Amino acid sequence: MEKTTTPQITAGSDLSELLISLEPEQLSVARRRRVPRRYLRRPQLLLLWSLRLYLLFMIAVVIYQVWTGA
Image 1 (cartoon, one colour):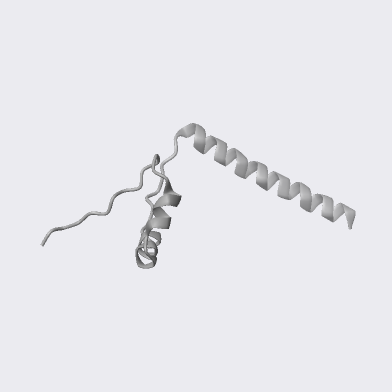
Image 2 (image 1 turned 135 degrees about the vertical axis):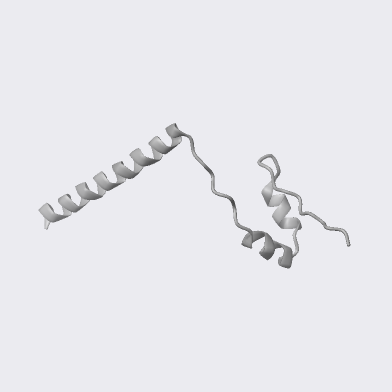
C-alpha cells in the first residue's frame, strides 16, 4: 500500500485557484487542518504590544468622554 502525501501550500502558490479546484469533501478536510503557530521577531512583538496598549488607552479616553458628556 502506497502512502500518498498532500502537496503543501506555499506562500507563492495561488490559494484561490487551489480552493476552486478542490471537491467539497477535500475542501472541508483542508479547512479542518490546523495551521502552525507563527513565531514573531522582537520588532513585530513590540509593534503588536504597542498597538494593544494604544487600544486600551483609547478605550479609556472614550469611556472618559462618555462619562463626562452624560
